[in-house]
Length: 183
Image (cartoon, rainbow, N blue to C red; front, side, top):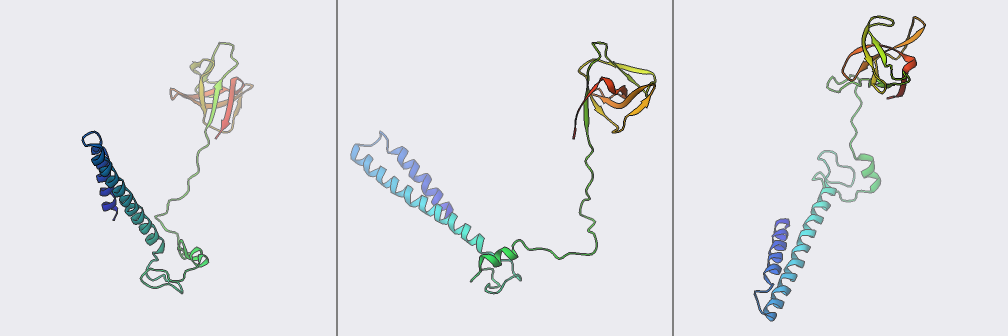
């Protein structure tokens, strides 16, 4: 029915398009009436077919799960909304053993970002260890990722382990960082 309805709609549309300037006024009016009638019938067939499909999908019940008032063929005879809500979706029975195919939850790592700030244009020294040798100078505005949640105190400063955008890892003084939201 859907295919017939869709084909009828296309035929009616072509009929309307043909009914333009190629025919005389009376013939054009008759052709447009026929095309409009065909379009109306085809649209009704298409909507009826879609409605029937929706109705049938709502009536399907899995075989072997028929409730009182339903038949094994899957068609409900006197199903009440309460019985449908109680049985749909079907719930599984709990098992005592864990299924090895179910993925386990893994914790999402917390990512903290920081920006180099307050060096008055001198930049921040990236070091290989707290108070260690210099790796690079990071200018103000450099974006860093904090690697460890706990800061380390050494040489009178609080140090944070960071990773730069260029993937260099090292330690910087926390005083010159603006730490953003950790998510």
